[in-house]
Image 1 (cartoon, rainbow, N blue to C red):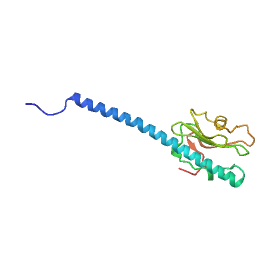
Image 2 (tube, helix red, strand yellow; image 1 turned 90 degrees about the horizontal axis):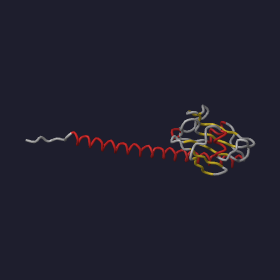
Image 3 (cartoon, rainbow, N blue to C red; image 1 turned 45 degrees about the vertical axis):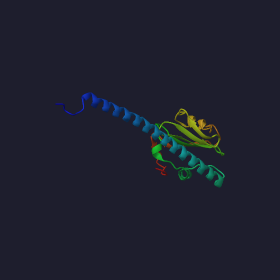
Image 4 (cartoon, rainbow, N blue to C red; image 1 turned 60 degrees about the vertical axis):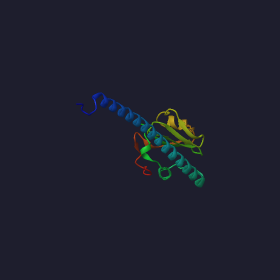
Length: 163
């Protein structure tokens, strides 16, 4: 008389196969999630770049006050991060400006009036002295301003636009 059922070896093989499939799925999900963060940051930076250009066209100058910047920046906050500082608006006193951001994936991106869309293979380092020049806005320029919006894992208290 033979009893029906699975042996322990058969059960272990099924468990191992399920674990391998789960590991592959988790790795693929993280990659897709990081691509989504990167795409969101690039889209936000591009939209902000266009808004600053429109402001410049309408006013013959770049935005330079907290209030003006607040009205021109739109972000999806949950896509930013990567530790340290993660969003800055750099400008000179003339028409040279850039928006630099770091995705939660750790990748860095910028839109610059002196270089267009940019990606950083590695984050140039936190601080105006690193990020603005990396986006072709030299910190020694006349009228230079670096305005942090996302800094040290949080958002500036004056910045209320976007979620």
